[in-house]
Length: 222
Image (cartoon, rainbow, N blue to C red):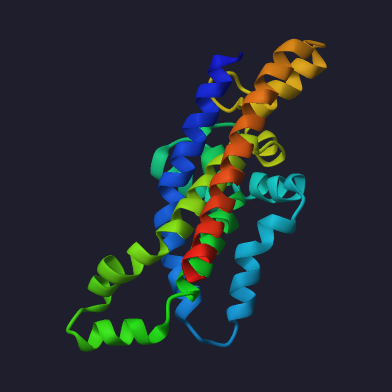
């Protein structure tokens, strides 16, 4: 087991969830309740990382994070360092790549809340923020949990985007998925199999959580 790569992977997955979930709740609620021209375009932009080849997404992020690009220049002015081939760079890339996994389950959960429930809460004197915290969030927690599980598991298994933006720097950007590839290239099939089994277990457990929650929601409606 490559413990350094395992630590980088779990650190990356944990931080991706921590940053994306508040954004996922905000965007999910907004997309679920808002009615405006161009909403379909916004939803398409959120879902775009699902269909873009990872190398294509990684290439555009690599260019965007460069020292001559606006994002790279802004980051350098704030921190004094670059983004490409750093942990900060793969974290930002992970946030972009995992955006649909964080937003879509939460959006679907908010869409299942009857609008008249919000109106009743407002008529009872609750502010929009109080309605969100006391009424809506307790109802959409299965969607939030699904988003957390999917984002965490997908981050652990992400390969193309991370390799394009971060390379394979040991202890910095070399994740478990990249370590598996390196072990196969070195003909260390036993080491690769051990790490692959760990990712398989995490992925299977994640899907079990997601489908279990979906079944629970259907059972509760029945």
